[in-house]
Amino acid sequence: MDPRTTRRGFLGLGLSAAAAGTLAACGGSAPTQTGAGGSGAGGGTGGGGDGKNATHWFLTGQPGQGIRENTVKRFNDANPNTKIDYTEFQNDAYKTKIATAIGAGQGPTIIWGWGGGTLRGYAENNEVEDLTSWFGENAAVKDRLFPSAFAAGSVGDKIYAMPAETVAPIVMYYNKTLFDKVGAQPPATWTDVMNLVDKFNGAGIAPFSLGGQSRWTNMMWLEFLLDRIGGPEVFENAFNGKQDAWSDPAVTDMLTKVQDLVKAQGFIKGFSSITADSNADLALLYTGKTAMMLHGAWTYGTMKKDGGDFVSGGHLGFMNFPTVEGGKGDPSDTVGNPGQYLSISSKATDEQKETAKKFFATAVLADAEVQEWVDNGNVPIVKGADSKFTGGDSEFLKFIYNTASNAKVFAQSWDQALSPSAAETLLDNIAKLFQLSITPEQWVESMNKATNK
Image (cartoon, rainbow, N blue to C red; front, side, top):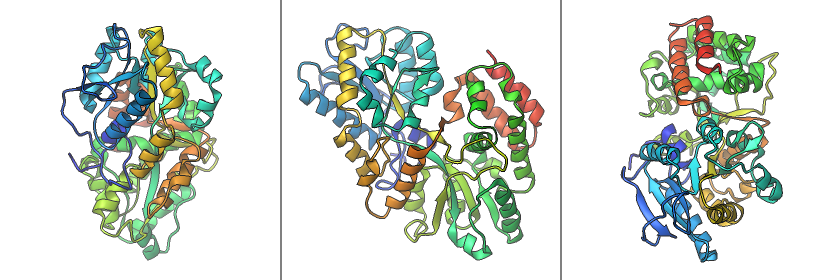
């Protein structure tokens, strides 16, 4: 198992911050196929197959793999006549296999995924069930989950996936020791951010760490700034393919502020050659080379594991992104990974679909599963899960819980929300923006071409 915490690992497996402190996509590239409850018998043939049992595909890698297995096993023990067969895949193999299988009408009954642009494609091709009326009839199932998690599982005003598992917003981290050293307070506004850049540079300390070579790390700055400036509707328009949505003045303001931050030496020198997968950006914060860092909740565990007493000694601070003066966005809004998502194949038999819905209602994020996620240092997307947080990591876990559960809007990471081709254009343009090799006007023109319907 690779001991590094990565965003790709989180997107595939979930956060394991406190208990394990590490996360990566582990396991072989070949799928592990099991029978009902992991009996070792052959798995079903998918949603369109002849098998009586419903089928479920999901990812390997602990702790998520074991928790997912246990949830299916508990369901099968309670429902011996309507069981679920599961098949497990390593992250990258799964992405290829699931797309091929669904396109051929041979996908599993229950489809594990990330929502967003991929789910939209399934919905537009009538490959997954519309669950809107089912959630209306099963209000108790919906009401116990974070409301903010449903956006990435919806297309338009219809729900096509049940939010599941855990949450990980993007966090503004800061080094309390360095703030004390220069006599500064955490930033409440964008003006505070720019003033802190000057203050820390004047003290010979780089203001922000950034693994800029990875591109998606840069994206987090745009996601928050656009929300704070223009509100969530601006990106929603682009996501929905509205003509020239990126021409909104809030986008130009966002892009200008980012380049102002770069020009003011807001990021450590050489940031564009630092990779997030190496965790070098985290090390810059906990070793005192930089004062602040904008990064995912999943990085907490690595900083605790590798940072000496940085976390245990109370030197790590954390907060939501500051406001922008005059902006339209709600200060409670956040971005990142609002959950993982379970859909039901439209090609499944009626019996398989009913089994899947019973699984959603009685097993997914039931008390036993919630406890397992919490025991592994995760924040499940269930109201009241914070009552289970104990120990030295409870302050951080409660912060993550409150950020996610209280968010007016929890926006999915842009590169997950957009189609793969538009996401690649986005990431390429973001890298150029931070390298100051593209103007805001050129950025807007390029992105309009990528997302206009």
